[in-house]
Image (cartoon, rainbow, N blue to C red; front, side, top):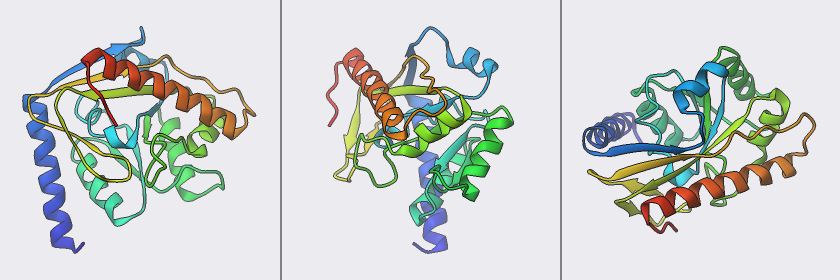
Length: 215
């Protein structure tokens, strides 16, 4: 993807999100601690599935939250789109290894800002939590906030994650699961499974609340 094509695609992406912002109804349900109040208590590690990543972008915009994005060309496109809505693109993996990406993540969290993850991205398998998020949660003690996302109207693509595109005039429901704390030293596989179960429950609750089926 050339620079002109990339710039055009980013502009179109931001334009579509603004269309959704103007036409969709956004609802937040679930955990007793609303997002606005939760943020006053310290940073959170927000988690939602890769195929539903558009849903939270609009209601949580312009709050300086970091978004973990791959270093691929597609990741560059996503970075340009989300930064137009007040997010900070954090490029690379959050996995173990003391990488530059991990240091950037920690610095962003320590500054008091949240970080959002799609733990099955960027290549899947779909609905499988990679170990990086669990490692970070256990290392820092900061909680994972699972978010189930559902759309009343959507298009579903034939990509690896069956990406869901909310359509104009849809209801976008964000179901907040209870905060999940992982104790220091929690094995990554155990932590990843706990996060997967929490995300699965939040997603099922969101789908059920809207009466929709998601692949």
